Image (cartoon, rainbow, N blue to C red; front, side, top):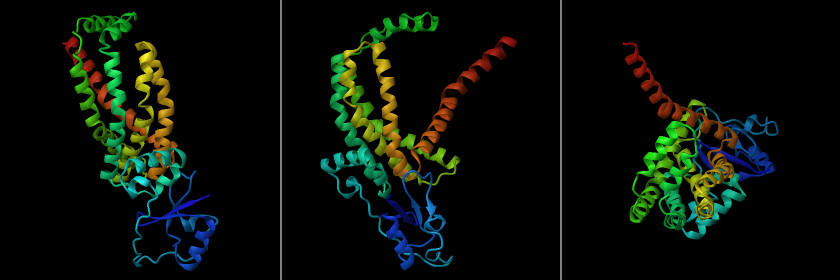
Amino acid sequence: MQIHVARHQHQLGVFAAEDIFAGLSSGRFLASDLAWREGMTAWTPLGDWPEFRGVGMPASPGAAMPDVPVASTIPWEQGKSLGSFFATIKLALASPASLLTGRFAFGDWLTFCYVAVAFSLPFQLAHVMMAGDQTAAVAELLGRFDAQWAKDMADQMAQTPPTPPALMVLSVFMGLAFAPLMYAAFGLAHWVGQRVCRLGPAVERTVAATLLACGVVILLVAPLQLLLLAFNPSVQLVVSGLFMIPACVLYFRAFGPATGVSPWIQFGVSCLVWFVLFCCCCLTPILLISGAMASVALR
C-alpha cells in the first residue's frame, strides 16, 4: 500500500514501504516525518509505525530541516485547462487517496469550483425554462396536508403572482455566481469544527478541499435537474432526497483524503457543525420567541 510522507506541512510524495525503510536508513526520511495511508484516521510520525520503529534517527530539536517543494499529482494544480479539470474529477472519483499530495491553494480551487458551476449552468437554465414557476404546484402539494400552517402557507402561495421568466433566469445566474463563496464559508465553518475536535488540517487546505469536493458533486448531479422534470413536486422531493446519499458519499470520499483525515471522521465533524448551525439559526430564535411570548402571557 502506498504511504504519503510530509515534513513541515510540505508533501514529500507517495512511497512504497520498502522505499521508506531505505530512506530512513539513508537519512532521506526522518523518524519525525509524518506519514499517512488509506484507512488511517490521522498522520503519524514514521518512528511510531511498527514496521519502521528503530530505523533511522529522529531529528534533533535544534536541527533545521530543509523545506521540500510540494510535488502535487493533481492535474488541476499542474495546469489550468478543461483537460486538467476533467482529469481531476476522474482522479477524485477513481483514486481519492492521491489528493493528499495537493497544495490546495484557495485561489486554485475557487476557480475549479466556478468551472464546475459553469458546466452546471445549462442544466439549471433548462430546468427553470422547462419547469416554469412551481409556486402553484408547491401550493397544491402543501394543501394536501392537514396541518393548519401548511394550509395557510398554501393559500398564501396560491395568491402569489407567477415569477417572470426573466427574473427566474436572473436568480439562477445570481445563485450560481455566489455559490462557490457560500461553499467556502461552509468550509471555514468545518475548519472551526475540526479545531474543536483537535484535528490538524490548515484552514486554507480545509476550505480548498471543500471547494474541490463541492465541484465534483456539482458536476455529477447537474443532469439531475433535467431528470426531475419527469416527476411532480412531491416525487421530485423524494428523488432529490435519495440522490443526497450518493452525493454525500462522493463528497466525503474526496474531502477526507484531500484533508488527510478519514472520511468518516470528517462526516462526523460535518454533522456536528450542521447541528450547531441548526441550533443557532433555527432553535435559538424559536426559543427566544417562545420565551418572549411566555413572559408577555405571565404579565
